[in-house]
Length: 252
Image: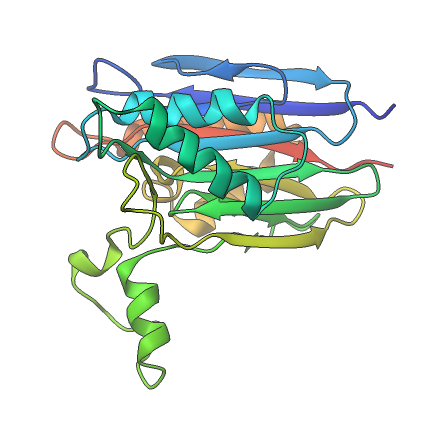
């Protein structure tokens, strides 16, 4: 059986409870401060995941935790599993209707194949040996929906902040079952890596800096430790967000 070294970390600032939750293939974490760690996952086709509770909803921290506890018992990651779990989510949150979270998850296979599923704007990246970050997930934002409806517009143009709001996420409400799910198979080459993260990472560290840090260190544990430090610098009392990350490098 293959062994998967999974590195992960988590940070929360200026909040009583971390609204992110992550699953490292073994356990669910929802810490205000979880130092970077690496675990060895010995199971066939493990799943790793990150969920980011939507702060404007009633119980975001419970919503993100719920989905990570569910994914802990998932054997096959696909859109059908998400739809079925959403119905359970609505059933289990009758007095917390409207609680919501994003989700990004990956199922890993021995030959470097990965299955990515996401709802919302938490992201999955493939990182090449040269440190190039390639987004594998899809951001379900108002802007992307608007651009899809208006093909003539420039995707690199400047748009108001409201366009970066979520267009789709997982909401504990039976009437909110028309959310979009992104699902796609990919393959990693040897020594390429997979990174799952909430937007607390990508909002506070510029893309060039992400690459510079990645290429400056040799292990995922070192890289995530520095990402935590950098993200913390970018957070202020006025503007802050939780940050969770899970990383794996495909080796042969």
